[in-house]
Amino acid sequence: MNKGIIAVAMSSLLVGCAAQTPEYRLGQFTAASSFNVRNLDYDSTSATRVQGEDCHQVGQPPNDSRLQRAMDDAIQNGQDQGVTGDLLVNVRIDQVQKNKPGSFFGLPAAHNCIEVEGELVTLR
Image 1 (tube, rainbow, N blue to C red):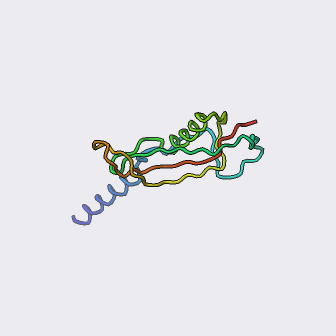
Image 2: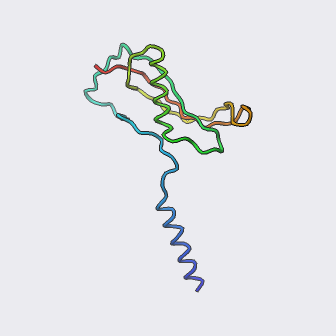
Image 3: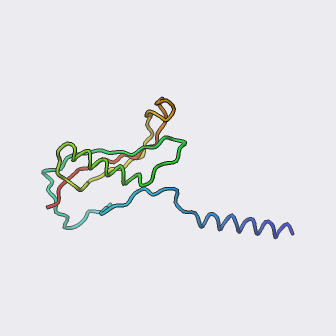
């Protein structure tokens, strides 16, 4: 009887782990590659180094599409500087912890941040 209960409990545990869905999506991209893309023709003379980030307070659930939001923030920051580019190349992505104003009266709290840095370029 004990063996049967243990077997059912273990089966439930394994099935529960196998059926888990992701807690949150890191991002969705129109184009992304970690390899050198052949025949990618962009104007390197217009390349401008840009940065963006997406943060959430440690201990609270993160927002969805964090990596996408950080990349969009970097592109938007470049466009706000007057760069007409719409593609990030030579991108570096880091996850860091920062102290930022928290949800408790704006007192500093630890935040988990995804930082994106790259060159914003225009396709030819």
